Image (cartoon, rainbow, N blue to C red; front, side):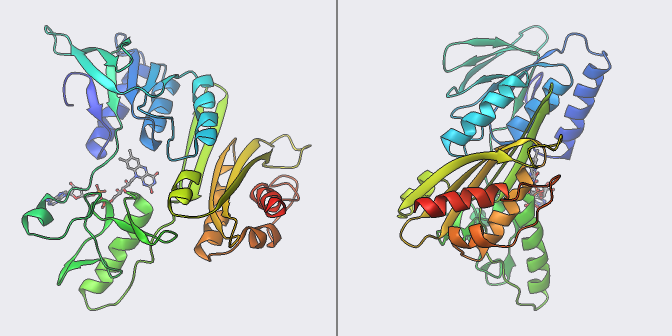
Length: 336
Ligand SMILES: Cc1cc2nc3c(=O)[nH]c(=O)nc-3n(C[C@H](O)[C@H](O)[C@H](O)COP(=O)(O)OP(=O)(O)OC[C@H]3O[C@@H](n4cnc5c(N)ncnc54)[C@H](O)[C@@H]3O)c2cc1C
C-alpha cells in the first residue's frame, strides 16, 4: 500500500492484498469500500477493472491514451466499447493529476484527472507499466539500453560471465531486428532456461520476440478477448514498410452454431514483399488464441498468401470454413 487505499499490482503480496480486499467486499464485509479507480489501460489495468467490477465495485478506468493502446486505434476502440458496456466507466486520454487523501484517516478520497474531473473513490489500483530494475547492473557499469533494460546477446549474456533474463532485459524484435521492451512471462521463462544451460557451459540462444500477447475482459454479460502479434500499422510504417491493412468481422464458429461469437481481425502486411507483419484480434469467447496461427506465420517470415492458403482445421463448432484470420489474409491478398 503506497497510501491508504492506493496500491500497485506488481507481485504476489500485492495480489494477496487485492484478493483479500475484493473478496471481503464481495462477502459484504467492507460496506464502505465500494468504488474503485483503476489507473492504466493496458493488460493489467483491464484485468484489474474486470476483477473489481465483477465483485461489485463501481469502477472507473482512467488511461492516458486508449484502452489497450498496444493495438491500432480502430481495434482498441472496439475494446473500449465492450469494457464500457461491461459496466466500467472508461476515461481515455486522461492522466492522473492528483490523489486526494483524507487528512484524518489517511485514506484516499478521490482522484483528479488531467481533464479536471474529480472521481470519488475508496481504492485506487495503479497499473502503470513496468520499468526494468537494473540498479545493480548500472552500479556495476553494465551497458543499459534506450528503454532502460540490459542488452543481452543471443546467449543472454550481458557481460563476460554475467547473464540476465526476464523483465530486466530488452529483447530483440524479430521483425524490426532491434531491441524492444516486452516484459512478459513467456519470454522470462525461456530466457531463464537459456541462462541455466549457458551458465554451466551450454550454448543455447534466445531467438527474439514478435510481441505476441493476449488478455480478456468478462463482466455483466460481456466477454471480450484481445490478442496481438507482430507490428501495428504505425510501428510498421515507422519501420519503413509499405503498409496495407484491413479489418474483417467473422465468427468463431459456423453461423448456425449457438456458441458462435464475433471476431474482428486486423491484418497488416507489406505491399512490396507481401510479407505478413502483424495481426490483431478483438472478439468474443474462443477468439483470441487464434493469434498463435498468425504468430507462427510471422515466425516463419511467411506472406499473407501463405496464411490464406495453409491447411487449417475446420468443423462447425470450432471455426468457419475460411478460418477468421485466414479470411482476413485472403481478402488482404486479393486487395494487394
Ligand atoms: C499483474 C500481472 C499480470 C501478468 N500477466 C501476465 C500474463 O498473463 N502473461 C505473461 O506472459 N506475463 C504476464 N505478466 C508479466 C510476468 O509476470 C513477468 O514478465 C514475469 O514475471 C517476469 O519474470 P522475472 O523473473 O523477470 O521477474 P519477476 O517475476 O518480477 O521476479 C523477479 C524477482 O527478483 C527479485 N529481486 C529483484 N531485485 C532483486 C535483488 N537485487 N536481489 C535479489 N532478488 C531480487 C524480486 O523480488 C522477484 O522475486 C504479468 C505481470 C503482472 C504484474
